[in-house]
Amino acid sequence: MTPLFSVRGLEKRYGARIGCTGIGFDLWPGEVMGIVGESGSGKSTLLSCLAGHLPPDRGEVIYDGRDVLAMSEPERRMLARTDWAFVHQNPRDGLRMAVSAGGNVGERLMAVGARHYGDIRETATDWLGRVEIASDRIDDRPSAFSGGMQQRLQIARNLVTGPRLVFMDEPTGGLDVSVQARLLDLLRGLVRRMGLSAIIVTHDLAVVRLLADRLMVMKGGECVETGLTDQVLDDPQHAYTQLLVSSVLQV
Amino acid sequence: MTAMDAYNFAYLDEDTKRMIRRALLKAVAIPGYQVPFASREMPMPYGWGTGGVQVTAACLTPDDRLKVIDQGADDTTNAVSIRRFFQRTAGVEVTEETEDATIIQTRHRIPEAPLQERQIMVFQVPIPEPLRFLEPRETETRRMHALADYGLMQVKLYEDIARHGRIATAYAYPVRVEGRYVMDPSPIPKFDNPKLDDSPALMLFGAGREQRIYALPPYTRVESLDFDDHPFVASKADHACDICGATESYLDEVITDDQGGRIFVCSDTAFCRSRQEDRQ
Image (cartoon, each protein chain N blue to C red):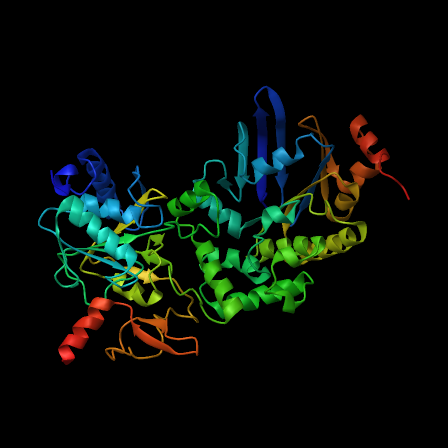
């Protein structure tokens, strides 16, 4: 078996400051990796570099045997809307707020050449159902949706083309706790059923405990500890990881 | 000194006309591609056809015969003022007959009479970017054109069907040129879209405020975007002209009183008049 996604020696600098440096890992098909760390530790920079939103200064990113950084823009865009998906923290960044829910889900289909209205609508209805949005809301705009529904809609829009790799940037940030729990449950179900590989950036350890197989802890732009999620969370080795784990509030 | 001698031929100075002609040549070379040009201020407000007037000025020769229409009519304000503008600044002959004209500047219509090879159509364009209301960033729309990334255009049509049960876009209906660039055909009714396809005449589009020129060379393939199960239909009012009786021309609805009285008449006044004359 070969890894689906490989990263070697990735570095991104903002002038003299380090965004992230010396990052390397392999992601295997069906595996979910969590990236945790405090604000400013370079998590989001790393994710943007991986997803091709930011050009890294050094290192290589290989997806399915192809060098992502050497790809042309059309190839990368094609990849970003077929094999990849990106779930933003704020659904407003990932949705078109002036376009109906059905149009939002259908956009990726139409972008890859779907030209049959009935089929597009059927697929969109199906996907709204899978993320627990009532089918009679298909023609409503996302601005009429609650925060949790918007986030679920964004997930449907991303998964509709059957991607193999999903990037998530704080998918549960900004949602209240009960909605978070439902969203996590939904995500876990989708990831398992579709056999997705995913990279989840978050500062919420509960999210990675629930979703991630493997964990990477970042501090100051560097990876300080990696390992299986339970192993890292139950027996943290690095001082910073220990701090992070002990900072979780117990109710 | 007569008014004629007070201006350079066709108002614009020669350097400006050269600049516009170069933009036109590039536009013809890349059908449907929006070429930026240094639009000049014209002695009329934006929205009154400053782009079309500049293109016409750059194309005019003293031997040309000019026709100007506004929504198909030769006798409305916009048409009359632009026609008079070129009579005064270029001294060219003008006509109302589509067949006699060598250059036809138009706002929002293509004449009913078939166009010919020696003719140039000049369209006045308010918003040249078909993706504008879907994607407000110019940098992004230009990249989308560069990559032929047109899924978003289809989303607009999807929204139309979702909301109205059919593609309700009735004018400025997006077209794809030679299977490559998606283009806004200016706010012509979609009834006129099929006339763009494989037309023997050269079609030039000028947007003055937005500083863009684009073109369709003669015999260019122009397809209207649609869905497989919701094909493009060139629609018009289901009526005959109340003056000339034509059933195949595009009609305007005219309110005649405050009792609900209305008539449908040809929007192309020259076409309607010639049919009336034939009947007499």
